[in-house]
Length: 400
Image 1 (cartoon, rainbow, N blue to C red):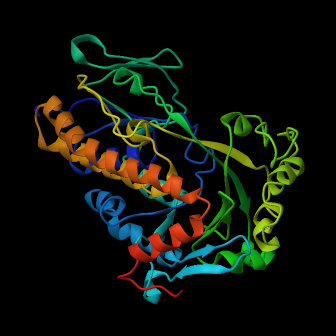
Image 2 (image 1 turned 180 degrees about the vertical axis):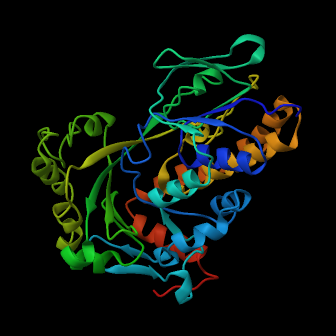
Protein backbone atom coordinates (compact mmCIF):
# COMPACT_ATOMS: atom_id res chain seq x y z
CA UNK A 1 0.00 0.00 0.00
CA UNK A 2 1.40 3.41 -0.96
CA UNK A 3 0.01 4.96 2.22
CA UNK A 4 -1.29 3.12 5.27
CA UNK A 5 -5.07 2.80 5.28
CA UNK A 6 -7.06 4.55 7.98
CA UNK A 7 -8.28 1.70 10.16
CA UNK A 8 -10.83 2.29 12.91
CA UNK A 9 -11.53 -0.52 15.38
CA UNK A 10 -14.62 -0.20 17.57
CA UNK A 11 -14.04 -2.09 20.83
CA UNK A 12 -10.97 -2.78 22.97
CA UNK A 13 -11.70 -6.39 23.86
CA UNK A 14 -9.27 -9.25 23.15
CA UNK A 15 -10.16 -9.35 19.45
CA UNK A 16 -9.91 -5.64 18.78
CA UNK A 17 -6.63 -5.29 20.69
CA UNK A 18 -5.13 -8.33 18.97
CA UNK A 19 -6.02 -6.80 15.60
CA UNK A 20 -4.38 -3.50 16.58
CA UNK A 21 -1.26 -5.27 17.86
CA UNK A 22 -0.71 -7.49 14.80
CA UNK A 23 -1.27 -4.48 12.54
CA UNK A 24 1.37 -2.62 14.57
CA UNK A 25 3.80 -5.53 14.16
CA UNK A 26 3.39 -5.09 10.39
CA UNK A 27 3.84 -1.33 10.52
CA UNK A 28 0.17 -0.47 9.97
CA UNK A 29 -1.34 2.07 12.38
CA UNK A 30 -4.88 1.83 13.68
CA UNK A 31 -7.16 3.61 16.13
CA UNK A 32 -9.29 1.79 18.69
CA UNK A 33 -12.44 3.50 19.99
CA UNK A 34 -13.53 2.14 23.37
CA UNK A 35 -16.59 3.03 25.45
CA UNK A 36 -14.84 2.36 28.80
CA UNK A 37 -13.41 5.51 30.34
CA UNK A 38 -10.09 3.80 31.05
CA UNK A 39 -8.39 0.42 31.16
CA UNK A 40 -9.43 0.04 34.81
CA UNK A 41 -12.97 1.44 34.53
CA UNK A 42 -14.67 -1.91 35.16
CA UNK A 43 -13.98 -5.47 36.16
CA UNK A 44 -12.88 -7.52 33.17
CA UNK A 45 -14.41 -10.78 34.39
CA UNK A 46 -12.91 -14.19 34.96
CA UNK A 47 -10.25 -16.28 33.32
CA UNK A 48 -9.73 -17.59 29.78
CA UNK A 49 -8.15 -20.81 28.56
CA UNK A 50 -6.20 -20.05 25.39
CA UNK A 51 -6.11 -22.80 22.79
CA UNK A 52 -2.89 -23.52 20.91
CA UNK A 53 -4.60 -23.28 17.51
CA UNK A 54 -6.49 -20.04 18.13
CA UNK A 55 -5.69 -17.79 21.10
CA UNK A 56 -2.06 -18.82 21.39
CA UNK A 57 -1.58 -18.72 17.63
CA UNK A 58 -2.92 -15.16 17.65
CA UNK A 59 -0.46 -14.22 20.39
CA UNK A 60 2.34 -15.76 18.33
CA UNK A 61 1.43 -13.54 15.38
CA UNK A 62 1.37 -10.62 17.82
CA UNK A 63 4.88 -11.45 19.07
CA UNK A 64 3.53 -11.91 22.58
CA UNK A 65 3.53 -15.66 23.12
CA UNK A 66 6.66 -15.69 25.27
CA UNK A 67 5.37 -12.77 27.34
CA UNK A 68 2.10 -14.66 27.80
CA UNK A 69 3.67 -17.79 29.30
CA UNK A 70 4.70 -16.39 32.73
CA UNK A 71 1.29 -14.72 33.05
CA UNK A 72 -0.58 -17.93 32.31
CA UNK A 73 -1.59 -20.63 34.77
CA UNK A 74 -1.25 -24.17 33.37
CA UNK A 75 -2.52 -25.47 36.72
CA UNK A 76 -5.83 -23.85 35.80
CA UNK A 77 -6.37 -26.80 33.47
CA UNK A 78 -7.51 -28.89 36.43
CA UNK A 79 -11.18 -29.78 36.08
CA UNK A 80 -13.66 -31.38 38.46
CA UNK A 81 -17.06 -32.68 37.41
CA UNK A 82 -19.49 -33.19 40.29
CA UNK A 83 -23.05 -34.25 40.94
CA UNK A 84 -25.36 -32.23 43.17
CA UNK A 85 -24.24 -34.38 46.11
CA UNK A 86 -20.68 -33.03 45.53
CA UNK A 87 -19.38 -36.52 44.70
CA UNK A 88 -16.61 -36.28 42.10
CA UNK A 89 -17.60 -37.96 38.85
CA UNK A 90 -14.45 -36.95 36.96
CA UNK A 91 -11.19 -35.27 37.91
CA UNK A 92 -8.84 -34.11 35.16
CA UNK A 93 -5.35 -33.16 36.24
CA UNK A 94 -3.58 -30.02 35.02
CA UNK A 95 -1.02 -30.42 32.24
CA UNK A 96 2.10 -30.39 34.40
CA UNK A 97 0.66 -33.30 36.37
CA UNK A 98 0.24 -35.40 33.27
CA UNK A 99 -3.32 -34.55 32.30
CA UNK A 100 -5.40 -31.53 31.39
CA UNK A 101 -6.12 -30.15 27.97
CA UNK A 102 -3.09 -28.01 27.14
CA UNK A 103 -5.07 -24.76 27.29
CA UNK A 104 -3.37 -22.62 29.98
CA UNK A 105 -5.54 -20.11 31.78
CA UNK A 106 -4.95 -16.37 31.96
CA UNK A 107 -7.04 -13.79 33.76
CA UNK A 108 -8.87 -11.46 31.42
CA UNK A 109 -7.30 -8.46 33.13
CA UNK A 110 -3.78 -9.82 32.64
CA UNK A 111 -4.44 -10.57 28.98
CA UNK A 112 -5.87 -7.12 28.35
CA UNK A 113 -2.92 -5.47 30.10
CA UNK A 114 -0.50 -7.54 27.99
CA UNK A 115 -2.16 -6.45 24.75
CA UNK A 116 -2.53 -2.81 25.81
CA UNK A 117 1.10 -2.62 26.88
CA UNK A 118 2.20 -3.77 23.44
CA UNK A 119 0.48 -0.90 21.59
CA UNK A 120 1.84 2.58 20.90
CA UNK A 121 0.56 5.19 23.32
CA UNK A 122 -2.62 6.79 22.06
CA UNK A 123 -3.78 3.82 19.98
CA UNK A 124 -6.81 3.34 22.23
CA UNK A 125 -9.15 6.32 22.56
CA UNK A 126 -10.96 5.76 25.86
CA UNK A 127 -14.43 7.01 26.73
CA UNK A 128 -15.51 7.15 23.09
CA UNK A 129 -19.08 6.05 22.56
CA UNK A 130 -20.00 5.36 18.95
CA UNK A 131 -23.37 6.99 18.30
CA UNK A 132 -23.78 6.08 14.62
CA UNK A 133 -22.03 4.44 11.69
CA UNK A 134 -22.62 4.96 7.98
CA UNK A 135 -21.21 3.61 4.71
CA UNK A 136 -19.80 7.03 3.90
CA UNK A 137 -18.82 8.59 0.56
CA UNK A 138 -16.84 6.63 -2.02
CA UNK A 139 -17.05 3.47 0.05
CA UNK A 140 -15.26 5.03 3.02
CA UNK A 141 -17.15 4.17 6.23
CA UNK A 142 -17.83 6.93 8.71
CA UNK A 143 -18.48 6.72 12.41
CA UNK A 144 -19.96 9.44 14.56
CA UNK A 145 -18.94 9.69 18.20
CA UNK A 146 -21.15 10.83 21.06
CA UNK A 147 -19.44 14.23 21.15
CA UNK A 148 -20.42 14.81 17.52
CA UNK A 149 -17.00 14.08 16.05
CA UNK A 150 -17.16 12.42 12.63
CA UNK A 151 -14.38 9.96 11.71
CA UNK A 152 -13.94 8.83 8.10
CA UNK A 153 -12.02 5.58 7.64
CA UNK A 154 -10.82 3.23 4.95
CA UNK A 155 -11.58 0.17 7.07
CA UNK A 156 -14.11 0.03 9.89
CA UNK A 157 -13.97 -3.05 12.11
CA UNK A 158 -16.75 -3.87 14.54
CA UNK A 159 -15.10 -5.55 17.50
CA UNK A 160 -17.81 -4.24 19.77
CA UNK A 161 -19.45 -7.40 21.02
CA UNK A 162 -22.94 -8.83 21.16
CA UNK A 163 -24.85 -5.59 20.61
CA UNK A 164 -22.50 -4.20 17.98
CA UNK A 165 -23.22 -0.76 16.54
CA UNK A 166 -21.28 -1.68 13.41
CA UNK A 167 -23.09 -4.95 12.58
CA UNK A 168 -26.25 -3.28 11.15
CA UNK A 169 -24.13 -1.97 8.26
CA UNK A 170 -23.64 -5.59 7.21
CA UNK A 171 -26.49 -7.66 8.58
CA UNK A 172 -30.02 -7.49 9.98
CA UNK A 173 -29.27 -10.38 12.36
CA UNK A 174 -29.79 -9.78 16.06
CA UNK A 175 -28.79 -11.94 19.04
CA UNK A 176 -31.53 -14.28 20.27
CA UNK A 177 -31.98 -15.47 23.85
CA UNK A 178 -30.92 -19.11 24.21
CA UNK A 179 -33.29 -19.95 27.06
CA UNK A 180 -30.42 -20.11 29.56
CA UNK A 181 -29.26 -17.48 32.03
CA UNK A 182 -26.16 -17.27 34.19
CA UNK A 183 -26.04 -15.56 37.56
CA UNK A 184 -22.51 -14.49 38.44
CA UNK A 185 -21.02 -14.31 41.92
CA UNK A 186 -17.55 -13.80 43.38
CA UNK A 187 -15.60 -15.04 46.40
CA UNK A 188 -12.41 -13.24 47.44
CA UNK A 189 -9.26 -14.48 49.21
CA UNK A 190 -10.69 -17.98 49.07
CA UNK A 191 -7.77 -19.94 50.52
CA UNK A 192 -7.98 -17.93 53.74
CA UNK A 193 -11.63 -16.92 53.98
CA UNK A 194 -13.35 -19.81 52.18
CA UNK A 195 -11.01 -22.83 52.49
CA UNK A 196 -13.77 -25.42 52.04
CA UNK A 197 -14.89 -23.82 48.79
CA UNK A 198 -11.27 -23.53 47.66
CA UNK A 199 -10.79 -27.25 48.25
CA UNK A 200 -14.04 -28.11 46.48
CA UNK A 201 -13.14 -26.13 43.35
CA UNK A 202 -9.43 -26.93 43.22
CA UNK A 203 -6.92 -24.99 41.11
CA UNK A 204 -8.98 -24.78 37.94
CA UNK A 205 -12.67 -25.21 37.10
CA UNK A 206 -15.51 -27.12 38.72
CA UNK A 207 -18.81 -28.08 37.09
CA UNK A 208 -21.68 -29.43 39.20
CA UNK A 209 -24.64 -30.64 37.14
CA UNK A 210 -28.08 -32.00 38.00
CA UNK A 211 -31.79 -31.27 37.61
CA UNK A 212 -31.20 -29.51 34.25
CA UNK A 213 -29.17 -26.74 35.93
CA UNK A 214 -25.61 -26.20 37.03
CA UNK A 215 -23.19 -24.52 39.40
CA UNK A 216 -19.85 -23.67 37.81
CA UNK A 217 -16.82 -22.24 39.57
CA UNK A 218 -13.54 -20.98 38.19
CA UNK A 219 -10.34 -20.24 40.07
CA UNK A 220 -8.77 -16.90 39.13
CA UNK A 221 -5.14 -15.92 39.56
CA UNK A 222 -5.80 -13.29 42.23
CA UNK A 223 -7.14 -15.52 45.01
CA UNK A 224 -10.70 -15.25 43.72
CA UNK A 225 -13.24 -17.79 42.60
CA UNK A 226 -15.86 -16.79 40.05
CA UNK A 227 -19.19 -18.57 40.46
CA UNK A 228 -21.81 -19.05 37.76
CA UNK A 229 -25.25 -20.47 38.47
CA UNK A 230 -26.77 -21.66 35.19
CA UNK A 231 -30.53 -22.09 34.89
CA UNK A 232 -33.16 -22.50 32.20
CA UNK A 233 -35.50 -19.56 32.61
CA UNK A 234 -37.54 -17.01 30.65
CA UNK A 235 -35.52 -13.99 29.57
CA UNK A 236 -37.66 -11.75 31.77
CA UNK A 237 -36.46 -13.67 34.82
CA UNK A 238 -32.90 -12.49 34.37
CA UNK A 239 -33.89 -8.95 33.45
CA UNK A 240 -36.01 -8.29 36.54
CA UNK A 241 -33.74 -9.45 39.31
CA UNK A 242 -33.95 -13.09 40.34
CA UNK A 243 -37.58 -13.51 39.34
CA UNK A 244 -39.49 -16.60 38.32
CA UNK A 245 -42.80 -16.30 36.53
CA UNK A 246 -42.64 -19.74 34.96
CA UNK A 247 -44.74 -21.63 37.52
CA UNK A 248 -43.97 -24.21 40.20
CA UNK A 249 -40.44 -25.09 41.19
CA UNK A 250 -38.93 -21.65 41.53
CA UNK A 251 -39.21 -18.55 43.68
CA UNK A 252 -42.73 -17.10 43.63
CA UNK A 253 -41.97 -13.42 44.04
CA UNK A 254 -39.51 -11.01 42.49
CA UNK A 255 -36.33 -10.47 44.45
CA UNK A 256 -35.38 -6.86 45.00
CA UNK A 257 -32.30 -6.35 42.80
CA UNK A 258 -31.11 -3.76 45.33
CA UNK A 259 -31.15 -6.36 48.12
CA UNK A 260 -28.26 -8.85 47.61
CA UNK A 261 -29.42 -11.04 50.49
CA UNK A 262 -32.91 -11.43 49.00
CA UNK A 263 -31.46 -12.16 45.56
CA UNK A 264 -29.09 -14.73 47.06
CA UNK A 265 -31.95 -16.49 48.83
CA UNK A 266 -34.01 -16.58 45.65
CA UNK A 267 -31.13 -18.19 43.81
CA UNK A 268 -30.49 -20.70 46.59
CA UNK A 269 -34.15 -21.68 46.39
CA UNK A 270 -33.42 -23.05 42.91
CA UNK A 271 -30.90 -25.51 44.41
CA UNK A 272 -32.83 -26.72 47.50
CA UNK A 273 -31.47 -30.27 47.84
CA UNK A 274 -27.92 -29.69 46.61
CA UNK A 275 -24.93 -30.33 48.84
CA UNK A 276 -24.29 -27.51 51.32
CA UNK A 277 -20.73 -27.20 50.10
CA UNK A 278 -22.03 -26.44 46.61
CA UNK A 279 -24.72 -24.11 47.94
CA UNK A 280 -21.94 -22.22 49.74
CA UNK A 281 -20.73 -21.04 46.33
CA UNK A 282 -23.87 -18.89 46.29
CA UNK A 283 -24.46 -18.38 50.02
CA UNK A 284 -20.92 -17.12 50.70
CA UNK A 285 -20.56 -15.01 47.55
CA UNK A 286 -19.72 -11.37 48.12
CA UNK A 287 -21.36 -8.31 46.63
CA UNK A 288 -24.30 -8.30 44.24
CA UNK A 289 -25.26 -11.24 42.07
CA UNK A 290 -25.34 -10.33 38.39
CA UNK A 291 -27.85 -12.01 36.06
CA UNK A 292 -26.61 -12.55 32.50
CA UNK A 293 -29.05 -13.87 29.90
CA UNK A 294 -27.12 -15.87 27.29
CA UNK A 295 -27.72 -14.79 23.70
CA UNK A 296 -26.44 -16.09 20.38
CA UNK A 297 -26.45 -15.05 16.73
CA UNK A 298 -27.78 -17.53 14.18
CA UNK A 299 -25.43 -20.42 13.47
CA UNK A 300 -23.67 -19.71 10.20
CA UNK A 301 -24.22 -15.93 10.42
CA UNK A 302 -22.56 -14.21 7.47
CA UNK A 303 -23.07 -11.23 5.21
CA UNK A 304 -22.38 -9.91 1.73
CA UNK A 305 -19.36 -7.71 1.25
CA UNK A 306 -19.86 -4.06 2.14
CA UNK A 307 -16.89 -1.91 1.11
CA UNK A 308 -14.54 -1.12 3.96
CA UNK A 309 -16.53 -2.77 6.76
CA UNK A 310 -16.15 -6.07 8.62
CA UNK A 311 -16.71 -7.67 12.03
CA UNK A 312 -14.82 -9.92 14.40
CA UNK A 313 -15.48 -11.82 17.60
CA UNK A 314 -18.92 -11.65 19.22
CA UNK A 315 -20.00 -8.92 16.82
CA UNK A 316 -19.61 -11.46 14.01
CA UNK A 317 -20.48 -14.78 15.64
CA UNK A 318 -21.86 -14.43 19.16
CA UNK A 319 -22.39 -17.85 20.70
CA UNK A 320 -23.01 -19.31 24.15
CA UNK A 321 -19.94 -19.97 26.33
CA UNK A 322 -20.42 -23.74 26.24
CA UNK A 323 -17.70 -24.33 23.66
CA UNK A 324 -15.12 -22.13 25.41
CA UNK A 325 -14.38 -20.55 22.04
CA UNK A 326 -15.45 -16.91 22.22
CA UNK A 327 -12.25 -15.09 23.17
CA UNK A 328 -10.05 -17.58 21.32
CA UNK A 329 -11.97 -17.03 18.08
CA UNK A 330 -12.02 -13.25 18.57
CA UNK A 331 -8.25 -13.17 18.94
CA UNK A 332 -7.72 -15.42 15.92
CA UNK A 333 -10.13 -13.24 13.95
CA UNK A 334 -8.11 -10.17 14.89
CA UNK A 335 -4.78 -11.74 13.98
CA UNK A 336 -5.97 -13.12 10.66
CA UNK A 337 -7.68 -9.88 9.66
CA UNK A 338 -4.45 -8.00 10.36
CA UNK A 339 -2.41 -10.51 8.35
CA UNK A 340 -4.82 -10.22 5.42
CA UNK A 341 -4.60 -6.42 5.47
CA UNK A 342 -0.81 -6.64 5.57
CA UNK A 343 -0.67 -9.15 2.71
CA UNK A 344 -2.97 -7.43 0.18
CA UNK A 345 -2.67 -4.00 -1.39
CA UNK A 346 -6.37 -4.01 -2.23
CA UNK A 347 -8.50 -3.60 0.90
CA UNK A 348 -11.52 -5.44 -0.48
CA UNK A 349 -9.36 -8.41 -1.43
CA UNK A 350 -8.00 -8.45 2.12
CA UNK A 351 -11.43 -8.26 3.74
CA UNK A 352 -12.82 -10.94 1.46
CA UNK A 353 -9.89 -13.26 2.23
CA UNK A 354 -10.41 -12.77 5.96
CA UNK A 355 -14.17 -13.39 5.85
CA UNK A 356 -13.84 -16.41 3.56
CA UNK A 357 -11.73 -18.16 6.21
CA UNK A 358 -13.61 -16.83 9.23
CA UNK A 359 -17.18 -17.76 8.26
CA UNK A 360 -16.86 -21.57 8.21
CA UNK A 361 -14.62 -21.60 11.29
CA UNK A 362 -17.15 -19.57 13.25
CA UNK A 363 -20.05 -21.69 12.03
CA UNK A 364 -18.41 -24.90 13.26
CA UNK A 365 -17.72 -23.39 16.69
CA UNK A 366 -21.23 -21.96 16.97
CA UNK A 367 -22.74 -25.34 16.17
CA UNK A 368 -20.59 -27.01 18.83
CA UNK A 369 -21.56 -24.34 21.34
CA UNK A 370 -25.28 -24.83 20.64
CA UNK A 371 -24.94 -28.61 20.90
CA UNK A 372 -23.03 -28.36 24.18
CA UNK A 373 -25.63 -26.01 25.65
CA UNK A 374 -28.23 -28.73 25.08
CA UNK A 375 -25.91 -31.34 26.65
CA UNK A 376 -25.36 -29.28 29.80
CA UNK A 377 -29.08 -29.12 30.50
CA UNK A 378 -30.09 -32.70 29.77
CA UNK A 379 -31.49 -34.74 32.69
CA UNK A 380 -28.39 -36.99 32.42
CA UNK A 381 -25.96 -34.12 31.78
CA UNK A 382 -23.44 -35.47 34.27
CA UNK A 383 -23.00 -38.69 32.29
CA UNK A 384 -22.97 -36.90 28.94
CA UNK A 385 -20.32 -34.40 30.01
CA UNK A 386 -18.23 -37.03 31.76
CA UNK A 387 -18.12 -39.15 28.61
CA UNK A 388 -17.32 -36.10 26.48
CA UNK A 389 -14.46 -34.94 28.70
CA UNK A 390 -13.00 -38.46 28.84
CA UNK A 391 -13.09 -38.66 25.05
CA UNK A 392 -11.45 -35.25 24.64
CA UNK A 393 -8.66 -35.97 27.13
CA UNK A 394 -8.05 -39.67 26.45
CA UNK A 395 -4.56 -38.97 25.12
CA UNK A 396 -3.69 -36.84 28.16
CA UNK A 397 -5.00 -39.17 30.85
CA UNK A 398 -7.36 -38.52 33.72
CA UNK A 399 -7.61 -39.32 37.39
CA UNK A 400 -11.17 -40.64 37.66
